Image (tube, rainbow, N blue to C red; front, side, top):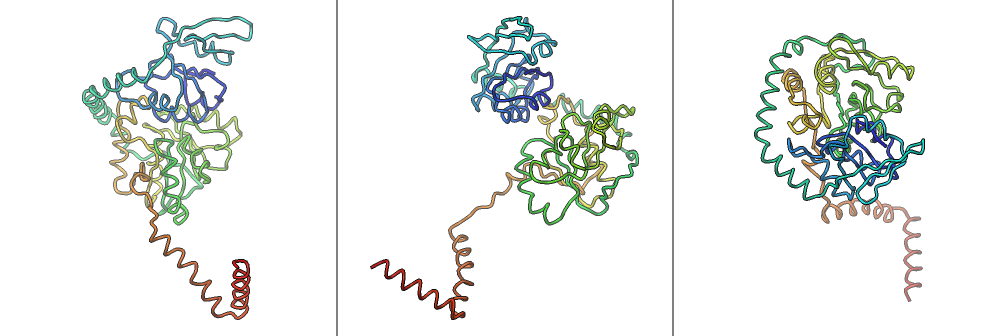
Length: 372
């Protein structure tokens, strides 16, 4: 199976498929999505690591035992994913043998990607990190100066049925550690009943953890039809000029939606929307906040996120990685107190109730008979 967009390909992959992607610097989330499919071999038209920054994807895949290959530059072509998608194929002796539906066959040489090669690229990327960070900061500040007026203006007013006034709001993005963070916040969600906003695939993340999103915000490129059909209110994030490619998909499903033209990323828009709807507190899970996060998304700066977070201020709490902050620890002392708490009412009942006391005496007599 082949696709230029890894997250779209993962929806169609199975454990008996070979994945053909065109994804330079494969990120950790893409690697985890590939691992979830059970695929055993991945071929990349682009380098798994370019050395620009220390991408985690290749290391994750190799450590899980997935065979990685790259196609030599002279054989690589943008249309190759379209040509090979759905074809029967085998990897034999370092070559990809492809058989089309018409009966034609072709052999494409492959370059195996080893752990030593990945580690060498990792060291190269780590050494260049200061220079990469400098360029990232310059790009962020340049775009922040150009876009600041856009973020000072309020968003287009939307007549939402989802009310957020004076309520807690959780914005979920399918970023690093989102599963663990959602599980850690289970008690908080159960007690406070916050408004749940899924940003694209974040809606699926909520549903996988047993929650129904109240609002789905995004350009609709990674959310599943199942999530869109769950009954949540839908806000399609459009370009600043009004173009909204995601609207067509929503309408094909026969669903109503709001269109919200705005600059920046969909997670920025979701946070701004909650802020302008007078949310009391905005908690984010899985959002992108660091340079590596944004480079993995193919963005060379984080101007919109910097401006949005500066505007929202103290109402915003980032729960990303909260599961790593504290893990409950069970001790023998705690177990002892739990057992004592359970035995206390049982002992009291036996002491007070004559029927229960008589039953206990009969059991004790029977046990002694068996013992001897």
